[in-house]
Image 1 (tube, rainbow, N blue to C red):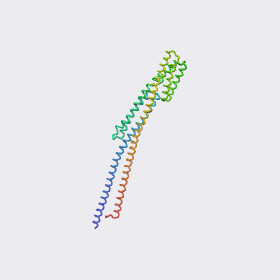
Image 2: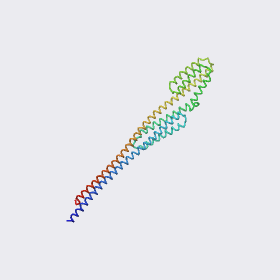
Image 3: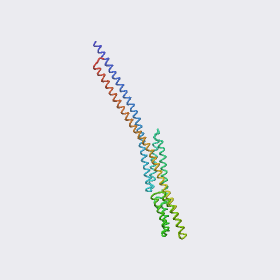
Image 4: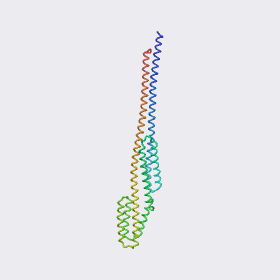
Amino acid sequence: MKNKQLENFIKASTGNIFKVISVTLALLLILVSTFYIGFYLIDGHLHTHKKFGYFQKIIFNTRVSLLEMQKNEKNFLYYLDYTYADAYELSHQKVKSSLYKIIDHDSQQYFSFSAHKAQDVVDAMARKFQNIVAEQQKVGFSEISGLSGKLRKSIHNVEDKIKDILPLYVQVLKLRRHEKDFFIRNEQKYIERFRFQYKDYLRVVRESQLDPKLRDDVMKMGKEYYQTFLLLSESIRTIDILQDEISDLNKNLMIKLNQMANLANRSVAQGTHKVDSVIFFIKMITALISVLGLLYIGIKGIRYLKHPAK
């Protein structure tokens, strides 16, 4: 009888141990599978996070280089120094290089279309800046060079000829007033006033009682002054228009860069959120499996203590 009870006890204990081991192995298998799937998902999301993080950095560098272009453009026109024209081109190449990097690394075409468009815009900006440099060469890099120097020389020649002839001198002073108003305000209306005043200047010269040779010299010098001013004002107005066009292009480019940056920022944020979600899921599954395992072992233990032979 005792041998029979012992045999039943051993059989029941062996069966319970086997069940505990089977359940434990099943729970461990679920846990390992959860970790494997979780780490696989995390690796994918981290790859996405890293890729878009790279785009974030490149787009930021592009913006910095674009700001350098703007700064060098303004410095060139303010200081009239070729150094800033060279620096502008260097910044232009940096922007293009950054955009090329975006295109090269964008295998899934998230940014390529916008980057290609941005390249076209930045190249258009650079061409217009080169036109500004060319126009500034015409104007001159000082008051004695280019058209500025020619204008200064021509008006001084006229003034030297007629400084003792009051009616003509007054006409020249009126021309110079409109000239200076234009240089200060850069408005078209002062060019038109200059044109009108020049006609009045010609009329006064023709009606004057000057020696014919002197009158011809005054007419010739006045014409040179007039033509030089028109050429100079045209270049200055062209520079002003080109600056406005570059400003518009820059705004357009910044919009494209902002759109690209927003997409990169959203993708990085989504990647971070997904990684956090997967980690939270793994923690929850781990905790649940641990609780279930402990509960199962506890229940089996209690049953065994109450009915050791079963």
